[in-house]
Length: 217
Image (cartoon, rainbow, N blue to C red; front, side, top):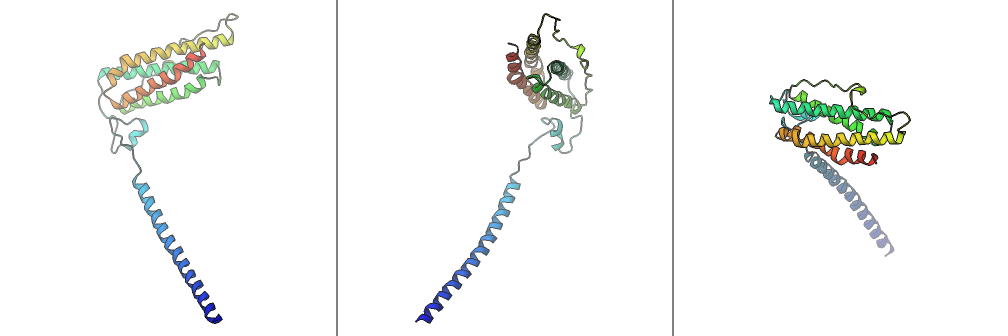
């Protein structure tokens, strides 16, 4: 009796061992298959933005197959509007750079100036896209912009800082009005221009203007 009982235990142990090995192999096989399947699903679900010659800007145009510059001929009023916008960006860049020179690393100028440079580069990219000459920046010398002057002995540094902020506030109000009333209505049919101008207006209205208004008080 004892002999049969031991044999039965050995049989059960061996059976569990076989089932365990089978389970490991089965799990490894199907887990690997599921990984491969999920990987293929992920790769098949990668979304490539649908840019076209009409809506691409800057590096986005590299994703448009066989696109060459210039993409089309623009009317004179559209060209003039682009030039006006770029000149305004040049001016704002010069103003904020001068502000940064006067107040190094002080907010909001240190946070605004780099974003300004990016937007100016994007706008210049539209000139390349349509085969236009990029206007020369007439404000490269800081002395060529209207900038608050610190009166010796009559204006302390903090008061001067507030005057610079007020100057920036006035410029942001003027820029937004110009873009909204004069530039956007002319370029709105061009999706690349319309989106960029809208983004610049959003930067101005929701970022720059509130910050320079705050520091002017």
